[in-house]
Image (cartoon, rainbow, N blue to C red; front, side, top):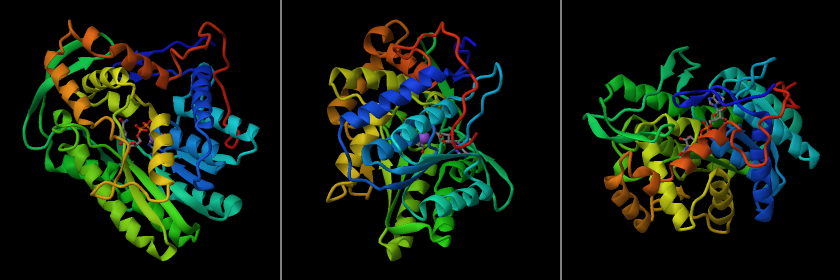
Length: 395
Ligand code: NAD
Ligand code: NA
């Protein structure tokens, strides 16, 4: 079929297999161009099909020749009904990994569930024996707690006060004022349940119990801080509470792993266009001004550049590079004083009329469509493609 983007607000309902494959191939080529990394060889990635998790899987496999198991929650394709992008990405990843003789298997299902944890443990035991790294890169709006059966929903809201600022509709370029009402107490608890550290801890407990963690095992999850400008909706909002919990969990897990000389880290990453971040008000306007500024400075990065730098310069080096709170920081360039001063200045000037010149709205839009395999250079979108693509280890 011929597949075109079909957008509904901040989501795209279709994805393009050839475009997704090309994205994965470009990321693999980038990693190969940067040379090898002395990283772990048996790696489990939770949330492995898109964004930072996919970049982590690619960096481990093609940077360190690692065997990888990827867990994700994606929609399989049907006749005339394209898959979700993470499905096509994973199909492409496995194809390229297999071509190079790299072990790669995937599990598609709810990572929050006991069943998927058990299935993953069985696969590790059967194929790898033990793992030496777990990357935890889940981003989900909902989680069913396996202990209670309760389905929790996360929200993106300020805490305490109404937040008023401006935002952009990146499809139209229209800059408008917004006002977001504060959350209630349940919203905070629910958001922490979904995006906090509890499930990461459950994974580690289950893997440890099953004795599938090797000596010197490393685990890492991803966080975000961002500038003062976005604090009310991000770091000091409901999602920020979840990130604080995730960062606290890293310390608990780190202590739990001492018997096997293991370590747990949180890496604070840069703001990037993903399915998750497009849905947060204010963030798209911030990102479009940030992209413009960082591109002008020659320091713009996407997920793959971020994770490559994280592995090669911060984590798998003689002395792990941590901030005073014990976190890895690849948001260091985003948070540079000169970058933030520039973005703050542009923020004041941003209107529907000025944004095309002072912001990188086109970069935002291109990145958004790229997430779904659209607007990728070198892809013929008029060509008839087979929408039913298999993931080798699943079908
Ligand atoms: P993403 O939406 O691209 O990736 C989410 C992944 O989680 C996908 O692989 C998806 O299949 C998987 N997933 C979702 N629900 C699942 C479930 N129930 N079971 C199994 N898999 C499931 O998101 P991302 O932006 O790469 O985010 C990953 C992490 O990085 C998050 O913790 C996020 O907060 C953090 N982060 C993101 C940014 C940003 O700007 N995007 C910045 C810093 C940190
Ligand atoms: Na991810």
